[in-house]
Amino acid sequence: MVEKTENFLEDIHRRNYEDPFLQRMCRWNSWVDPTNRTTESLNGKWNFAPDWYDTCRRAAWYRERVKDSEGHPLPLDFDWESWERIPVPSCWNLQKPELLYFEGAGVYTRTFRYRPLQEAERVFLYFEGANYRTTVFLNGIHMGTHDGGSTPFSMEITDTIREENRIVVSVEAYRRPERVPMENTDWFNYGGIYRDVYLLRLPPRFIRHWFLRLQGDGSFSTLLFNVEVDEGKEPIPVSVQLRIPKLGIDVPIVIQGGKGNACIPLRTAPELWSPEHPYLYPVEMLLKEEKKGNGETRRWDRVEDRIGLREIRVEGQNILLNGKPVFLKGVSLHEDHLELGKATTPEILRSTIRHLRELNGNYLRLSHYPHHPRFSRIADEEGVMLWEEIPVYWAIDFTNPITYLDAENQLSELILRDRNRASVIIWSVGNENADTDPRLSFMGKLSQRARELDGSRPVSAACLVNHVKLAIEDRLAADLDIIGLNEYYGWYDPDLTKLRQLLNNSRPTKPVVICEFGGDARAGQGGTVEDLFSEERQAWIYREQLNILRSYPYIKGLSPWILYDFRCPRRLNRYQESFNRKGLIDSNRSTKKQAFAVLADFYRSL
Ligand code: GCU
Image (cartoon, rainbow, N blue to C red; front, top):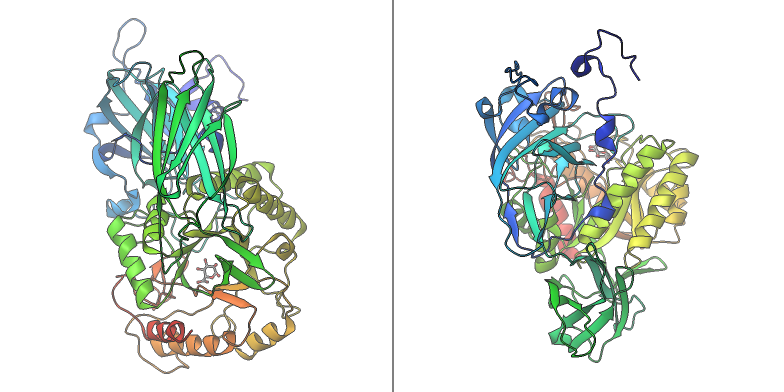
């Protein structure tokens, strides 16, 4: 605390200005499922300014104090309407050249009108993603703060919203050692509100979130259903009616303490979701008030969705999809686009899946953080299996309890957001972390957390080779269902003979997925296989790697690094030019390199 001297000036001398905003955090337990809800978009042009000294939060610009107590005008260092306007969603880095490497606090503001559409309506603000710490003010009042650059968050604004509103959002993208990820990554630190923002209008009592899946016992005969209800200010007796007409299901689920669970036997064998048959069932849930006497019940809320029913589990060294062994023919992917940065569009997602089809693939590793929520919905429809991951990346501060809470919250928000998506088959709790005791405890707890929220999917992580023993040996493997492994023989370690030795030395008792291998190549760079950064060298690495990997039955999937070249300020040689060039396709998302055909031929041969 700073001593309040007689000449103390709050706005410039106070050091702990951020603390009050950290008392009201938006976390997984305040998240509302927005699926198919009536939403009012707040997308569009917002006034924006880079707030280099974080003054909006430090000197409380959001209070819009424009006169003193005697009515005299005060000199302001902000003037919302004179600021430039940038699109929400977008990454500020790509709005103008001088903002490309801006990693500070950006302040967004706009006004909007609101009128209630139903009696006792409740209103929530919903952000699908903003990087990294988002502090939200409505009409001069702090509404909530969220940490995490890739997961959704929502906050209730019912008591603060009025007919005419001003929203002010400060988003800071500082890279810090205690954050998730920490300050050192191999990708570009895009900042801003880069995913959709909208209002959610909800009834006084509503369905907060739910989870429907097959019981993973290999019988495909039972559904498990969990639902959480916000009972409003005065709880009353309610139930949730679950309807899946095509399965002849129309059952009431009793709600107690805001929660309901059910184990529902299936009278008919369901059509199982798979890449070959991405079948989705329409599902409806009605929140109803149980009235005594005349039996008349009032309907409070209705949600609907389309759900794929499938089973994914591990048996010995096999990954079983609907009881049959499956090989994951994939490739890794960043959320990185030449013009949009970490923002994306349905067209970009569909074009990515078209490239996966050209690779004869059936699987994508969405690294190293939760991608756009639309991706798993499109993958549900298209029949693509997904690995989803939180950015517990490299040297996280594994001894810091605040860092753990941040990581666990991001994992919880990801799982609540996507656990109804059949396409998501693996949760990953991190990537390339040194095998230390604190990391083992930290990521072991994350694995446990994943299973608490969703026992229906395998948990994995991208582990490193034990290069002393030259073996797949990572203590975290005991907490995982599938062992992910990153190895770069032929590139970072040119000696490819070590790959065969490594695989011969290893005795995994679980399926192994090679999450990364590859090498850089600048599209169009000719040369020989000896020439680093040539396409020939990259293609040679793929040929050699695949020729070795194909002969180890415990390897059940591949997601080579990476589908597209991506921005990366660590990559500074004349071939890279601040891009990681391990893409099979150039950052223009159209020029394929020679290695693309090598992988496509391999997957076609399986
Ligand atoms: C690592 C890491 C990636 C990185 C890649 C590379 O395995 O997981 O994030 O981009 O190697 O070095 O290109």
